[in-house]
Length: 156
Image 1 (cartoon, helix red, strand yellow):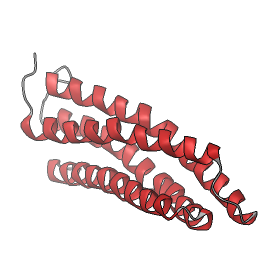
Image 2 (cartoon, one colour; image 1 turned 180 degrees about the vertical axis):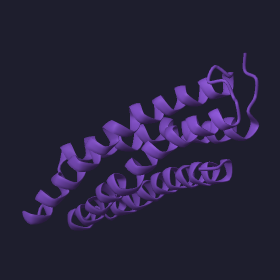
Image 3 (cartoon, helix red, strand yellow; image 1 turned 90 degrees about the horizontal axis):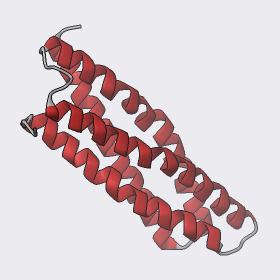
């Protein structure tokens, strides 16, 4: 696999990771705003599937293609921008993994409320608030990774 193939896969993976994350956030926030348990349950069901199909795939593709690109370009893995990118990638993962669990809980709690024709309960709102809060550090970390990949600054 050549440099351009790797670069294409790396950029595609980044686009999928960022785009899926932004899309998931948008759709789940919009569903939440309806305050309708059935709507939240339906959207959360799709969000969980999208996270497993798209985000999880990109999570694997990114470090593999990144390490291969660094090797092909002879970038040392100790370069400050690579170290910072990898650290931020771990931050993203540390927030994303719990978010997947929160999305599953949101889906299940909303589905149960919809079946019982009840309003969304307090535990749903707790999971939603935590899910929402966890999105910010992950989102801004991804933006910083994009900048580091483009600028490749010497940070130290």
